Image (cartoon, rainbow, N blue to C red; front, side, top):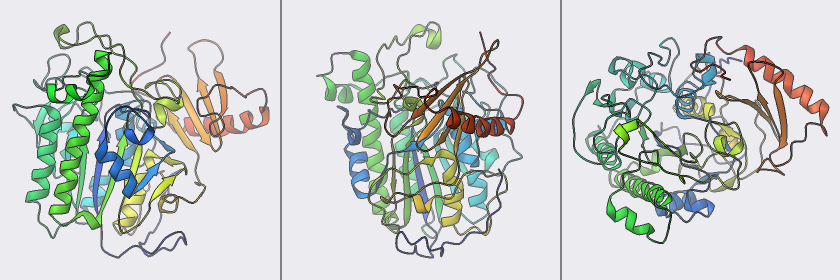
Length: 446
């Protein structure tokens, strides 16, 4: 349901000290396909000292939910509403003409109206042509790649199409994508007017395939026998190192104290990659990529391994430290950021929930259910329950019910034990589904 809310940074939620009237900067760092068990903070063998330190200084979000794949996650983040409302339920791929609707207010547009400088470094994936790139949706500056994946050195899409661009024009550069994006973010912070507030979205390609890591990063994981997992681990450590450089630049430019830092993965890890024609057959196969353990399954499904991903929040002025088990959704950031930016109203298209009260170690319930529509399944979370529906072209849909607090691995389907709860959640799911646009970018298949 769309909302129109007047907001003020002086609201007192009685959970933490009042935030300063100064408008904060925003640094949003997005990993591409990083799984639950792929960061040191969750016990992974992969070394992520920068992110571990950020989590120690800030708030580790243990129940942060996103989408099964990348385009829907990014669409929901930038609009504050379910991506399925806009017909985006799967990656925008190939030479698709689909793009983010221009009739919906985006986060950078709303922040731009509040006198913020806005920039995107890295992955866009919400329009595959320069004219439907980030600048069409409120970013003052953009640099990176338009498609969902790219050769880390040639900077081309899997079919050979150009994808590396800067400010609406395709460009040619040398270098590894992780290094180029890190350098771009640092340069942006160096040259930005120190008097201006900013929103910087740093969307890395790591650890998405194809995996092409320099030897210095591969050598960190000589103990990992599986070459695919070794390269995947190297990609994450390479990214973590880059994030460290960007955070150091924040400190050097004296912006760290008043910058909201959010690290998230767009979706859960991919299990494997066995290409045939992509990149002219130069890369792969990779039989072992990310790990979502102990969560179930991988990206593309609506199980926890695809939807529940690593997330870290840090803002010294909010002083939120520790571990939060409160339920947070990808669509919640837009209204929350706008509240902190002292917006007088939230765009009526926004359906996410302002969540400052959830950014705490104290238990606090969200008001709205978490509805997620992927191209394979739909799910609805009303804690502690999660209902998953799998529709078919013919025959009745299948339903699964899990208590995701006592059974995070989703091993026990409890639909028979809780028929009233299933019926109750079916009603809400049906209502949410009815609000989606009838045409979506990937229809059901046999």
